[in-house]
Length: 168
Length: 168
Image (cartoon, rainbow over all chains, first blue to last red; front, side, top):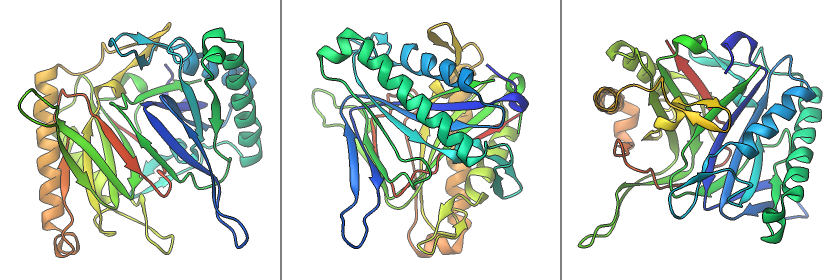
């Protein structure tokens, strides 16, 4: 979709049967907090320099409307048409470039700008799911990770069918 | 690393605490067969048109020598230096391009050529791990999925730290 040099957003998408993500690490007083989803779509998201709200819109549209989810009959439909749950995981490491033996992150967006776009992405996904009758009728939800946290995560799949979609 | 148009190989790499992959689906006479790894690296791999044995070499080197694995002290080291297990998952879907609402796979390598390169990749990873004293002493292994199968998969992570590395 985009040449390497002008990529401003990157999504890695996987199907799941269930997934669980830590949204708050354990502290002295509290156990760690988690969010969970059932059958649905796991969205790893990363913003690079130059990403805007327009990039976010394109990313939401692609994530929710692309036919990436298998029905029990093996037909590919969008996550809204499945319908299924959505788990959004901020994943800054996806913005890296290999240099020698290490990944470098010079092209990643500044943290505060990334947070703003991430929140926008989560909001727009949640809104789109709420507007989808099939999803709301069947109680499907959007869950999301805490930006900047380590994303302690587990998932069970019937085949992740990993997809990469880039945006410019 | 490579412009979109000349990418011939794509890796998505994630850390795991454990992972399990189906290598043979259940049949009438037999239960499904699985391989499992402990703490280590999950390698999703896809070959596109133009990939050669030279591409495979570069991919093996990057996967095993890049500092992508966190030690308990939080230092980043290669999977050979950790040392940890390796699980290789063929993932042709990673070669897709978004077109409208579907992913298209025109640039994916022909299946038989992909199988050959995949086997080469698995062999070279296994060899490299065997040559690494630290890995063999601690009984670390390379497991791999069956090319062309659906990759029924589950994983548990302390943070996947998802990385994309492309090769041309």
